[in-house]
Image: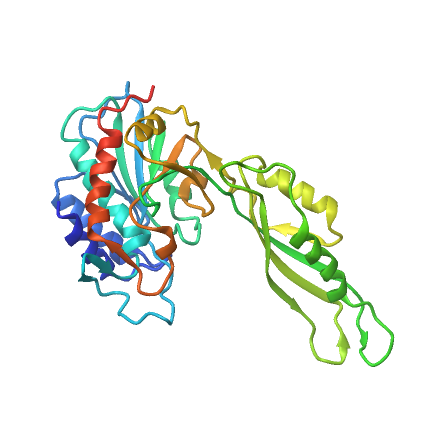
Length: 347
């Protein structure tokens, strides 16, 4: 397959999260043209090696089809793939098109000969919004997986740990009154105490790979007009957990310290990590691939088996205007994936 040509075609099809049908239709057709047997649920696609052997372990290769919405600061057409000076510009080129086409090309190369494992390639949807119809749904329809490669832009470094995410909706209650008189109970002032705690508190267990648990107040809303003491204040906190705390454990600590209502939108997006003794990590180290802890979240949160996040491109380019990926990154990524997985024994 021509990975670069396929990437350019994918960029040209808008695939913002929850609107991936057109790109899924296109990729399904292309994969069938390559001679692959493609299965589909909603806008998720997957294929597996033709010589499937139930006695072998199974490896999953996964990348996502969807993109974020293009920002207003784009100076180019985000849906036009333009190659200039070795760069391919376009929305989703870096996050996650480069990894997607590289993993598909690797799947084709790896399955040309017998491997000590079964291999699945899956292109998932709704990753950018952690949607219910993406990997969260697809994972329940796949065979048992023993190990997964999640393609995200890491510069082909091995992310052996990934921070979790918990979004908290918080609320303080007061009593309304006239702002000109000393009456009422200001809910904003109550919220300030909690917000100050979120700003300054440090969880005891720090990760060598992921650092501290990070809490950031990102939204706040209160009041109806200038002369009314607000009786309610709501604010949102973005919590990024490390591998030493489950989201439930972190939530319990938070509730012990703040005097406000704290409601998590989900507690299921936990931090993940893989043992450095895992055969895939050991192989990567032999290939001089470096390791790190990733502060960003991926579809790894839906996977209960060991996973390694490694992919084409640079995370710093993700979600930015005039996003691009290097042609050399895609081609080198294909070779790196093959070197990492060819003949790998994982059991």
